[in-house]
Image (cartoon, rainbow, N blue to C red; front, side, top):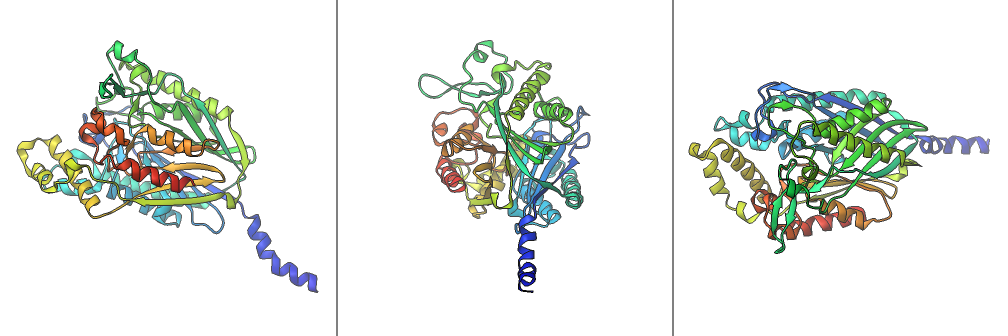
Length: 451
C-alpha cells in the first residue's frame, strides 16, 4: 500500500516531466489590393500582383510557460501602434501575452508599410490612404490571428532543435563606402549602375545565413532562416512581390515541402546587393538562387540537439531609444505636416517623425527580446539596424549559435552605430530618427539578453 501511495503521489510529476515541447505553424495572405500604397507611399502604388505576399509564423509551447510567437511578414515595415496591434492580436489568439510575441517585416519595397500612429496623424489632412491601406492592414492582422488560433488546435511535439549556418556567395555588400577621410564617399544601394563602385570590396557584412529548425524525431516541422541584407533586386514599378527572399523561400519549400519555411531579415540596414546587382531584372532570380543555395548549405550543416522544456527561455528588455537632435522640435514638424505647400512626401515623412518624437518624449519603450534554446540565442530587434550590431552580438557568444531578426518595430527607422553618425551618408545623414547614443543603449541591452 505504501508503494501504491508513492506512485499516486509522484505520477503527476512524472507525467509533467514527459510533456514535450510543441509547435504549430500558421500563415495568411498579406497581399494588398491594387491601388494600395507601397513602401510607405514612397514608390508607385500597386498596379499588379506579380507574386502574393505572406505572413508566416510559429507558436512554441513549453510546459509551465506561456506560448511564444514568432511571425515574419512580407511588408516594408510595421511600426508604432501597428506593431503593438499585431502583437496584441497574435497574443490573444495564442493565449499568451504581447511581450512574448515578435513580429518582423522582411522589408521588401514592392510591399505595404504599416504604422497606425502615423495614419492617425495623416487622416486629419486626407493623406492617410496615400501612406498605407490601413483598412487592409487591419484585415491582415485579423486573418493572421485567426490562422494562429486555428493552428493552436494542431500543436505537434518537438523532440529536437537544429542549428546551421553557411556563407551566401555574391549577394550582400555594404552600402556605405568610406573615403580616405573616413566619410562616406560612395553609397551602393540595392542596385548600382556604376561599374567602378560595384568593383569596390564588399565591405563590412555578415556573410552567413543561419538556420533554426524544429523536428519531431527525423521529420522537420519548421525551418527559420536569418540573413542580413536588404532583399531588393529592383522595385518601384507597382508590381507587388516578395522579391529575392520570397523566391528563395519558395525554392526551399519545394525542396522540403513537409516543413514550413520562414525567413527573417537580419541587421541589414547598411547592407544590400549593390555590388552584385546593376538593376537588371534577371538578377532577382539569380540573387534568390544564391540565397537559396546558402540556405541549402546551412541545412546540410545543421546539427540537431534534443530540445526539452527547460532549454527554452524567453528574455525581454524594454528600451527607450534616444531621439535624434534634429527631431526634438515637434512643433516644427507639425507645421510641415499641416502645410499643403510642403508636398505630400514631406508631409508624410513629417507625420512619421512626429509619431516617433511623441513616443520617445512619452518614454514609450520598444521591446527587445531573445529566445534562448539552451546556449543558442535568437534576437529580435527593431528598425533598420546596422549590421555591426549583429556582428557584435555574435562576438559576445563566439562559441554559440546567435541569429538576429531586425525590422521588428520599424518606427525608429535607421539605427546606426555611434561612429556612423559622424560619417555622413544616406542612412545616418538625416533619415535616422535616433541619435548616436543609441549604440550605448542597444549594446547594454545585447549584453543583458545574451549573458
